[in-house]
Length: 601
Image: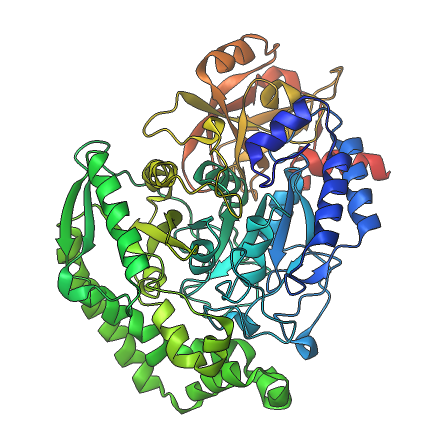
């Protein structure tokens, strides 16, 4: 029996006890059929196809939990491509059927996750409320009269109602955070560029982020690490440069009185104050900061020339299909037609001026703690006043991507009316991992459960520990890759997949003769100008790392590999004598491609 909310820890424990991915999918099918919200999905994966996907996973990786996300059901916002399923962006006339998965979806599926459907959204990801869709308006899981938040509306409701363990959203102005607050979830909003946007329909291409809705911070971080990694196909993809935050003496910036605005919502304001006191009780130093320059930067996203990016994304389609747009969405996007190049440059100049002003505030605080949304509204109220009320929802979210920040939204408790509130921790770029322990402890301290289950205990197994977790990274290139014969030696010893990437270009790969199972030999050849070779970086507990290395047979060993981004990691290397006369497969780009080619021949 699965719990109401499908967190990773519970799923893994159930699988270890004999539950199969097919069993879990049958439960998902039953829950989906029983759902009372008809607007969650735009395209659900048909029941029989879900069953087939579970069976295929079990054939590919029969050992329980042998992949990082083995058998984990997830949903995808319908502006992100998933092969075989139409991408609509909540506009039927715009729909197309992609032949390939988006980069992030491909990585998640390779890690064992099973997609259950494409979810509803504010059309073309334009809105923070969830009502701007011809497929209907998903509702708050706590009160169907209230909005779910948007634009990642269906994704949040899918997780909060227990239909999926996680879901992908996107976030330009807060769409990966506001729905989390309204549905008692965690919203992971990575540093811009950390998750590649290849295969996602842009809203504002220069600031868009793919995001993750999850039951716990630990789950969200685990999923983010599977999905992240540089992708040259995305012009805005970035290589990670992890930044730290103080472990002790952490200074948390909170709203000064003059910048507090909750639009009369005393319950959300009280929840914010309670979150501040919880942070103080954890030993943080609470400081008031001036939110004005951040708020002014936020205004540029819709009131400045950045709205022209929304037009750039759909300009050709709008010219021929204006009548197919939601009226509010169309009005917002068409407003960009009057913007000029001069305004664009002036807007950029103003953003940099405001960024300079925010630097003074970052001197006061290491992290900002803000309300995720200052209030919420009924669906009826939102439809009656869609632009003004939507704009209020983004007061504390719109600036985050423009100013290149990482953010994690977490539940903050419930008001007397039974609706949840949320807070978001925000810090400069690439503090994603450093933010996670604070976000996790704030979520646990709120005592608000997970999603619709207000009484659920957050699993201890998902706790995020600050600082060094004692894991050691190792790069694998052959039989230990995900889905390969020896991968169980990593996954079965508590290892976790950190990322899939490539080596630097001066490595060569050979097939070692007389090895069972077949193994490659990796050599560095200074001066060789290749494209790099596919590797997976895994993290192992220190004791498991020692046992693993001890079992490696000659001529293989562990040395330092240089990756495509210039960083180095311990990984498999081979003695040069062992590849003399061996078949070279460097041109194939990696062991997985070699195995696929061999099976196809």
